[in-house]
Image (cartoon, rainbow, N blue to C red; front, side, top):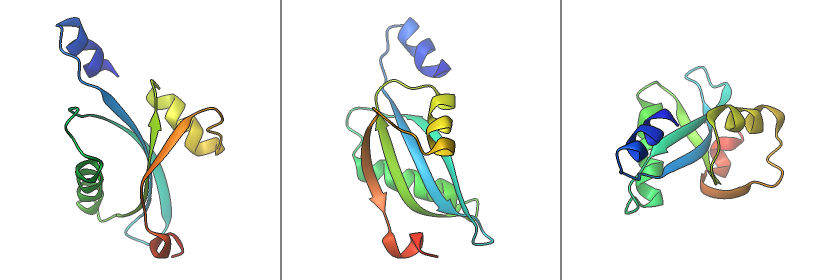
Length: 104
């Protein structure tokens, strides 16, 4: 992540969190995308969930799953995980999952 690297260059370490999102578009179609966000160590999972949910809601989308990929990954690697359904060897942490919404 470029911003993270720039911050580290000036001596500030802010960890990036790698996220895979699953959500419904305004037309009801399922979609997904990878995200990387910088977060302070004090940021709780629920704050991350609410932030992502709100960002998607502003676009008319409805979040139904949020998964964190623990480790150091580039955005294109996360995208490949989503598009090939292959996260072999990656440590995954389910932050949020709404079963009923996932069935729509």
